[in-house]
Amino acid sequence: MMARIGILGDLHLRKTKPVHRIDNYYQKQFEKLCYAYNTFDDYGCDFVIQPGDFFNNYGKDPYDVLYEAIALLALYRHIPLYLVFGQHDVKFHNMELKDVPAQILSQLDFITKLDKAAQPEKDDILLYGMNYGDPYIKKINRSRKKHKILVMHNLVLKTQKSWAKEYYSAKELAKDNRFDLIICGDNHEAFIQDNKVINCGSLMRMNLDQTNHKPMFVIYDTKTRKINKFHYPIDPIYIVFKKDIKKEDKQKEEQFREDFVISLANEDFEAGLDFRQNINTAMRKKRYRKRTKEIIEESLDAYQERIYG
Image 1 (spheres, rainbow, N blue to C red):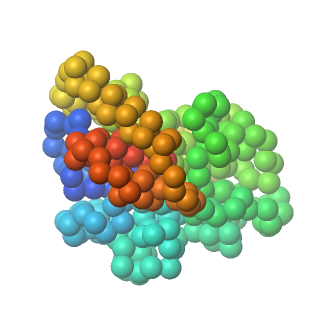
Image 2: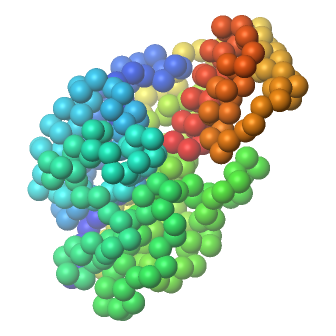
């Protein structure tokens, strides 16, 4: 059998807009998602796959975001949605907690969450899922008659980055002949590796370092293995982003960060495994200026959003 599959990237649906966006971010994100679903519908897609971080704030946002997502998915309920959960979809990294928007969508049967147990689709297609924090799947159905697809929310890089400590190489994943297609989330860059590994990146340009990002979605044909790439319509940068921070403000912020790092080196405290908690512990042990704390918090938020999604 043949199937057409619509493939999305990290959506990060949210109520508040990122600090550097000046447009109606809330409206734009749903316009783009509708654009993708309209295309999936026009091309007769049998189902849609989304690789995690469907939401941005695991329930911290007002219910408006959840209601809007439900309305959209109800409109396209004839196109089933399969996904994995990213770190932004779950609270305290606990996949079992039910009081988060992604779990509510699952309980209402608007989505099907994938895991290491194969989810059959159209008899000859098997979908496997690696949710955030899951180990790489080793045991799968080996039948050549099955078209096997892996969906994962883990950092996958096309080229090595100096800051990346733990990641999967797109080139190495493409060599895994157990899977016919691998769909990745978490990395906000958009790329396709060897016509096999698909990372659509983030739906929106959330930060200034994404000014050149061209958000995309994909339609994949299981019979021909053809990947049809689509780009969302996007507005010019000057409409989307406010002007860059003034040079003197940047210098002040850099000095604040430098002072903070130096002070950390002089502090004596027992570090844990949670980096952010270590930072907060260090700040509590010493009285830092309010603006310094704000800058550190903003930096951590921006770093998490940019790197880990």
